[in-house]
Image 1 (tube, rainbow, N blue to C red):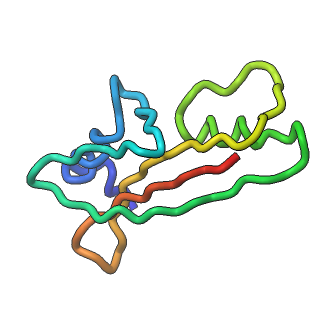
Image 2 (cartoon, rainbow, N blue to C red):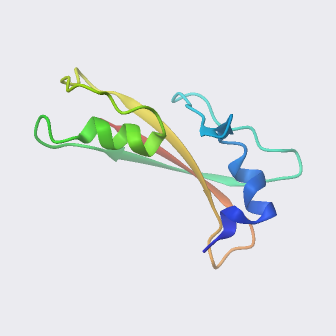
Amino acid sequence: PNWLSTLAGRRYLNCILHKKRRRTFTILESPVLPPSSYAATIPYKLFVSGKSGVGKTALVAMLAGVAVPPTHYETRGTEVTTVYWPAKPLTSIDPVMFQLDFWD
């Protein structure tokens, strides 16, 4: 459960951090792993929908580690936010990198 706090887990976590904050990736970017590390990337597209003003954009911003907008604005069109998260499944030896594309 605390794999990210181990030495091996920190190596993967450091690939998605910049100055101790989560790095922002675009839809075409991905984290660069050290040459000795390997992690299969498992992509997910998550569509966030709901009524206007309930906090969908704030939720995605919080999960992406970026500043939550201080004032409410209506999202025009679709905003795609990509979040990477390393994990080590209990049944696997190798860690995996989840690519979560939030479509808001």
